[in-house]
Amino acid sequence: MANLKTSEKKTKAQSMGLHSEVLTGKTQQKFFNPDEAENFYYFGTYDVDFNKRTEIDIKNMECREANKKIDELMKDGYGTIVIKNPQGKHSLGVGILNKLNLIFEGSLGYFGCGSMDGPIVRINGRVGWSCAENMMAGKVVIEKNAGSCFGAAIRGGDLICKGSVGARTGIDQKGGTIIIGGDAGAFTGFMMQRGRIIILGDVGINLGDSMYDGTIFVGGKIGSFGSDAVEAELTDSDQDWLKRKLKVAEIGENFDVSKMTKVVAGKKLWNYDALEPTEKKGAI
Amino acid sequence: MCGIAGLIHRGNTSNVGFELQGMLQALKHRGEDSTGYALYGKTDGQNFIMRFKVGENVGEGSTSVMEDVSVYDERKKIVDGYLSDLGAKIIKEERILPYSLRYEIEYDKDLMEFSQKIESVPGVEILSMGKSLEVIKDLGNAEAVCKRYNLDKLVGTHAIGHARMATESGVDIKSAHPFWGYPFSDVSVVHNGQLTNYWNNRRVLENKGMRFMSECDSELIAVYLAEKMRNGATLEEGMKESLTGLDGVFTYFVATKDSLGMAKDTMAAKPLVLYESDDLVAMGSEEIAIRSVLPQEIETYDPFDGEVKVWQI
Image 1 (spheres, rainbow over the protein chains, first blue to last red):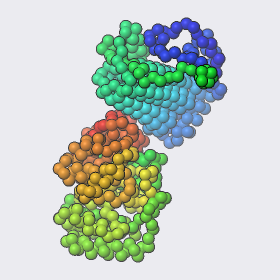
Image 2 (cartoon, rainbow over the protein chains, first blue to last red):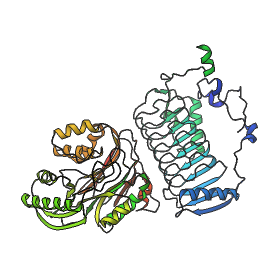
Image 3 (cartoon, rainbow over the protein chains, first blue to last red):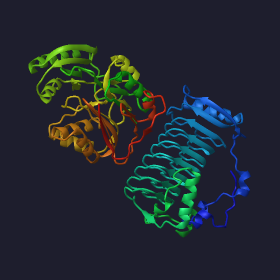
Image 4 (cartoon, rainbow over the protein chains, first blue to last red):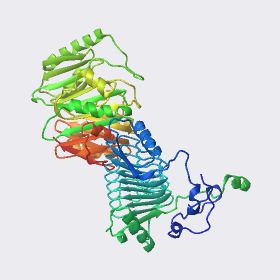
């Protein structure tokens, strides 16, 4: 991976009040610098052409076979792949570290599109538990509903569900944006560390329970706040960002963002030791 | 882990044995230590159907032992004698396996007294008692159990089933789901999860005269609901109370003669996917279970935390 330099310049996200914790030592925060983009590569990724399109029917395939087929097609330069008849199978479209247009004509089961970095995925159906878990970058759009642990531990990218989602959406989220067009279940944003969650509908109990950082925007009713989750002022900058994000996501374009509730960490539960182990030794 | 599945046809009947077999087989990766079916068949509603066992099929970790067929024969004789004493008339008798029997019985008195008498025979357990309910459970995956008991031809209105990965108790029939809602006719329960206040609740319920046949925590749900109903609560009321009365993580299904219900704990820790239309409700731990009966694109969703739903046929 690229050896990035730490930028002294304050990023837009920081100026909006996000990433507010001060990280020191080994855990310094580094932001992507477009000048260094060429340093980003993964072993085994392919040059694909988005205009080169193909369809595969995976009705009679096991998930490993289907995933291997996707990999082979990317190797052959296909940049747009349509998957027919996924029929709720688990672990489809996982581990793709390539630019790619991937379209599922149907629903996925558990762990769909997990651990991916880069592709743009459209799912014309529903997804089961833990969709896009650990996503690093890219975009996933789900046309119907999603199960629990939606976007668990994502680091980046946009994850959009046009319907409703189950419990623990954005659990352990470390970056990126999750957008929900409908309602969300209990423990949404549980232990989230960074990134943003937008819910246009209602949300269940214990919203943002034990969140370290990050921001949650809710359009509807909130069942209850979790431990250390508090309401914050919705700024003009927030509203601009919300409008732009919803427009780009093609979801709730006419939604009145000014009435949304902004939820952040109260930081009362914070118990970070600012010292690195070596510094700690010295202090002792 | 375990997987559960259920379906209800509203206003018509279907081959529910075959359909549930497909749903449970799709969930076999969630556990295939044992599989159980609670099927609500199309009957004239006149006589009781009693499914019972006179011995065990013993797997890993079971506290039971395998016995000789002659022991089963002896127990069956005693049961037949007790039925006669109780004034119950056997209309039809089937011995599907040496230890597993199905009786059609003419009987119109108290089911509690009836069950206590029959189960006083050591090694005998009534798996189900009802005018349309039949509980069939045994070791192995859905396909194996279905084949062993010829369930794929059974026509009915609704059914629930369970694919078990044994965690809290051994592998045997007594610990397999579904559990009959003793002593209520036509009530059955399947559960996915763990109950953490099992022993506290069990002690309280046993002191109230309720019966437990296994050490499986899931049996508590059937007994808990039965006790609530015995005290006048409706099924739905009992299920709503269970959300706070039962501690732990759970998604469970309950079925009665004419209804099917689901409940999900307040942490929504156990999965459930639901498909609902005017003429069919199908649900399971994973969408692939529903796909086995509805392969076309459908609208499914996850019920939220603390949700209780009941559908009528």
